[in-house]
Length: 608
Image 1 (spheres, rainbow, N blue to C red):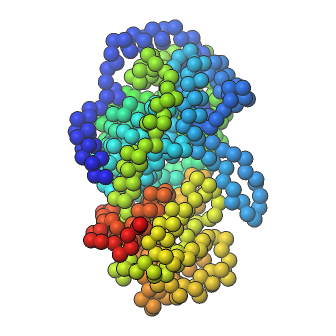
Image 2 (image 1 turned 30 degrees about the vertical axis):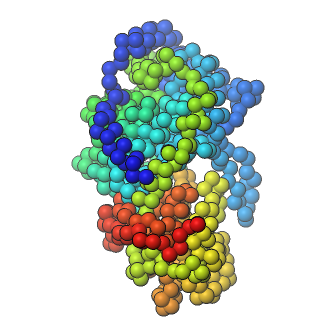
Image 3 (image 1 turned 90 degrees about the vertical axis):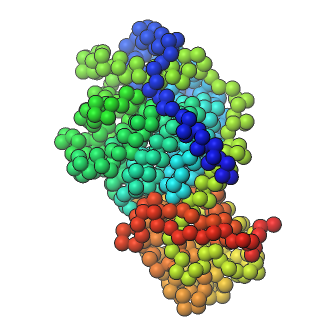
């Protein structure tokens, strides 16, 4: 496994930032010639990027026709690929259906090829591949969330993960990754960043963001630092409202802005501006997305950033309540934004910017500046020479065993043991021991893509023959919780897998109080019995602060099969534990804390 780190180390040293390197002569000629022949409408369209679903879509369908209109009539400069959604019933009492599905690799590539063929100017294509192409596309590589990389604390791994993401993304026809997340997550109640951040230590967030950006661009994809000027210290979800960060400029320079400066120095090609309000940077009320002092004054002039500047998605509640799609697109362009992403109504955004150009509200000089940056990005990617991808490339480049091995290594190295009061990790149990496994959920809805415990339970049973499993959540009744308390003493050990999401738009961050109470009661009763009790936390890593009496706590910072398998390997002593907290638990543990455990010389229960 460690061979990846050695290879990456050599590449990191050798790599040089290329995002803002001068264009070669042919590319520059293409940019100059293209911008001269574009109509005003075509120029306006270059500033817009609508979304589409990366699922199979017939060319003879309403969905395809709508996309074709945007490409041919609104002249959009690019598109954003997502996964998909299926209809789910909106019901009371048992709303457990999850509508979100992953896209398909060949469907995504096919759609991009078809849209490219329709476009008079090559499309710049993008996606949110924050933790690998598998975040959106089935079968592609899924890396752990960014905070797991923070716990592993290895720039070489971040670089190589970025490079692999670029290799897979480009094979599918995607050019821009809306990653890395350069936000410093120093607010435990942040509902929208959380494990998407590399952590709380400013220097490490900057170094890992820069490494990921270099890896992406070494692999041929453009990196996007987000969410400028820093979305980490807020307890408001910008999908639901407009967050405000009220820190003075000195603090913003020292904390929030520092990782973005590191990413810019590393050559990141793009920056995404957040829908957040920062009075210290702009006394005018409103999001940074619409702020000339933030976008043009701070990012362009003070930081000297010359690459592409994207909005965050314009369909988020933080901005949709402030105007129509057309009005908001105009405000973003006037602030200095180059590309307006995912407007609720892209045609309205097109008409709004077009009218603002015609009236002189947006000057021709301002419009051409953004169009030139968009075209230059396309030329750097070689799109003036070739814009389609071969569908034969995806099966040999996407989701390979070699790529999966790196994802597994990161997951294992991220596992962090923050408590082990009874010296229970690894668990010294014979293979015939009885284990009670509790799959503890925040709530049982919308787990369709990453069903909790699906890998952990069979991994436990491969090592201990008598494993009984129970799922609990906010809908578990008091009688059912009482039954678990009553049955717990019959087992040789208790393991809890705790799954709590910090999910955009959910407004949830915690376990239900009765469920947290169950864990506390089991911690106390198991202490009296001298019964091993280990809790492994998936997702939101701050949750253990709400159940401080747990005797042994492992953190994964992730939801994945690899994370679940890594926890069981740690419990069985089959791997070393060496992850370090990338965040602080105020009053409990500092950044960098982590108990180390070597791998057992020989596991008592080796997997056959």
